[in-house]
Image (tube, rainbow, N blue to C red; front, side, top):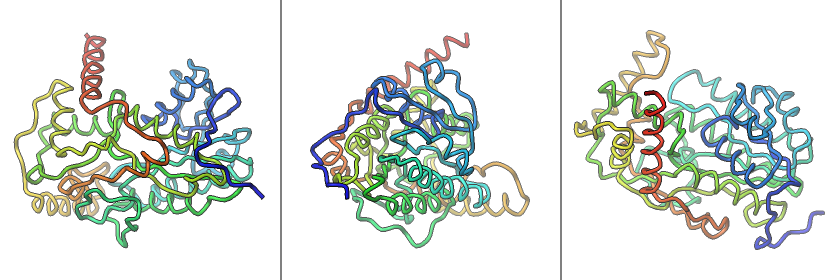
Length: 350
């Protein structure tokens, strides 16, 4: 029987630890890997592709599919802590692909952790798992999962989060973090989408820009994962729980988007459409893409229209209290760093 441990105690990460980061080559995964390396943790990265930049840091890369249980077991064997970050994001594509990666992949990680006697499993979830299409202003972790989801990503991530919470036991301590809209230098998802659509003239302000949203700078998101790991062990206060993670500084959504555009040297948005128009355009485009079997994502969907026109900001007091989470990089500092990264990138091209 494992004796409960006082939650004020810590298990600092260090040389004694062997950590696996699934999706270690991704935006958040790579940031977590780098912070673990700084703490002299022995790190493994698990993903489909090779990442020479991580190997230069001394990271052992294990190639494989998260949906392949044997490959996941092979990657986790010998580790004592796992950060499960890998996921399939996006707005379109077959449900089976999202289910296989996000849910089945998470089940594979849980089972592999149990077989390898891993004690700590930190899971990267998403606030979208509770989005019901309505404004969410200052809500906390008590908000229930909705009965219906407009997209495959939040539905399968909710299934995975439930599996993580259920897997918590005296043998395997689990915790789920819900970072919202991660951004910063090196982003290969959110910012490239914004820039591509803005440069193609396909991005408009949806609604009146009164809806505030939470975001989180990449370094703060990665730090939150390490803070959780050091407070996670069988019997600790955070076991089996989920936590919203953000800057704790909600801003109007399109102010954030325009700040990103300016940091990239682009003009801010001024043109707008109503939320209702965006929703029905999204519905029509979804039908067109489905009927004509068009590959890729439509320029708009009902889920995206809803996300962009509603408020999404969360009470992060639980993370502040239980994880000692306090964002170290402000939005202004982060935007400055983002702008500097674009300048460096442009100088290298020229």
